[in-house]
Length: 349
Ligand SMILES: Nc1nc2c(ncn2[C@@H]2O[C@H](COP(=O)(O)OP(=O)(O)OP(=O)(O)O)[C@@H](O)[C@H]2O)c(=O)[nH]1
Ligand SMILES: [Mg+2]
Image 1 (cartoon, rainbow, N blue to C red):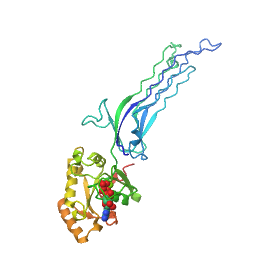
Image 2 (tube, helix red, strand yellow):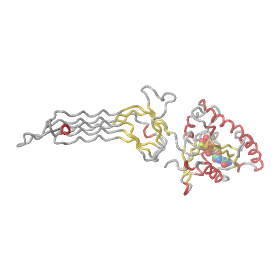
Image 3 (cartoon, protein in one colour):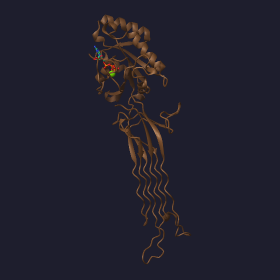
Image 4 (spheres, rainbow, N blue to C red):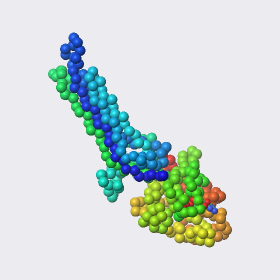
């Protein structure tokens, strides 16, 4: 199960109270104040790690409560700090404040944070500070202060954590176009591949090592169909995961209706239409590399003809590849790398 949205309610620990105490020892009638400080309350933190690929591990629980700090004690003993809780999240996790009763942040609300950088920690809820013991309040004039401060309250809240994968390239196309076959060929990803539509039910990330140039991270998302933006098929839910990509690789099945596939130009228009209708980002405006896939399965002259017709439609170069035989695949990767902005070359650093 792939989970890319979870709601969590978190409560950091309260700070321990400062202690009021006077040292009492035989032969030291005026031992002075010795009340220790309270410990700080534990906080609830998020830690970004590439070891996590989804938010699934947070889905079974909703409440996270960190321990409070202990109260200060006599003999200047400070209370122990409360233990903090750290929740791991994958890079690309957004945090939204979520008012009670809502399942979605209100329209137009910006995230509180966008956790893109691996190994960083973010404090979601600060623990309360420990109170000060009376030993801290001793002055020349008041050598036996009867005051201490209370521990601070721990912060808390309700948050939506939403994952938007971080990849430089997103593969889009109709179901069965060969998106998963492509990512399986070029990267470490091992998605399910099958000759029926909607094989891929969750997005997959694949990493293509480029040697000294770093990594190229590609996202394979479930196939889109006409009406996806209104929820048809698996809907446009997964388009969120290509929002942050710089380039789209648009794969189209070349084989056409004769071999049971869709018409290439129709396919292109359908996907283009869905990208245009996607409301949250300008997906149609992204740089696109268009490739006809399954080219080994068709007579080369026919492939040429279809590529030329599609190039006319797209007003751009159309590549001819076969994710199965590997024909043209390296060239596509090279083109993707060439198109990437230099600073985008390693999204996880
Ligand atoms: N002949 C041929 N078949 C291919 C090629 N690439 C993919 N296929 C086949 O096309 C079918 C669909 O491939 P997938 O990679 O699962 O397609 P997908 O686009 O990921 O499909 P969804 O996950 O349903 O969106 C499988 O039977 C593949 O073996 C290719 O280059 N040539
Ligand atoms: Mg697939």
